[in-house]
Length: 376
Image (cartoon, rainbow, N blue to C red; front, side, top):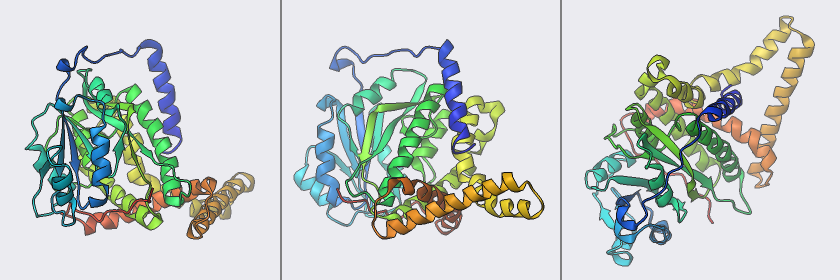
């Protein structure tokens, strides 16, 4: 249900809904004077290597220059990030810096006290945004029910992608499809957006917590495929593991902090989407997944149907075998995206289990070790 069934149910519900409810088409104000001011908010820690590319990308965005404010919050950075911004990009961006590093969430909260535009777009330093992104986000906010807009994440395709980048790219295509369907049914489940409120400093998934708390106030999250950010996949599976473990730990943390959302009598469709799309992935599903194999053997030994349970066991052995083969090929730097799928799927679920230990280890801290990205 978690990985296949929910997607099917969601697709059917969306089609049924759209038989009776047609989406409303909205448009931007006729002149630039009617457009709102927007802050492009970049939280960065030691991002010297991508400063120039990010600034060039930001200045090329199709939005009136006098209405787009570029803000960097670089707390704790001790490389050349601040110097690069001040020397080459002086007057093009505002820099907020303090020597103390408290983590991304704390930096966001501090930086937001210094922002006064009605709309804020959060973006990482290592992600490049398409030219029309700001216009598309502003357009989505024309709907008064929308309190947050989720852009699409895309993984840059390299000719020599390894298992990390290849697996992540395939996963995000699937995830983007689910997010788009979620938004068409009622609301996307996770993003970064407006209606900002301060979060606990040790929050690991700041964008997820922030956006879901917005929905708890009665707003929805719009999903905008025409506003997308492109980033490279992780450099290798060791670096990807850092990301996945932290995300899994953040997911478990989020389940506790967003526990009122588990009440379907209060949150209805949103509760159904949140539980199906997120909670199950980060909680019981990985445990049940790895319990299937020994349970299958036990049922056979206890006299279960040899044909039915024998076939299921053979399919599990094949899947785990393909996953191991994908792992072996990745260690040899051999590219085979078909085998990356079972490998990456098992890899993700193992890291959910590792996330429990990470959450205990990082308790009280919002800072983490960055995962290195693949070179372009």
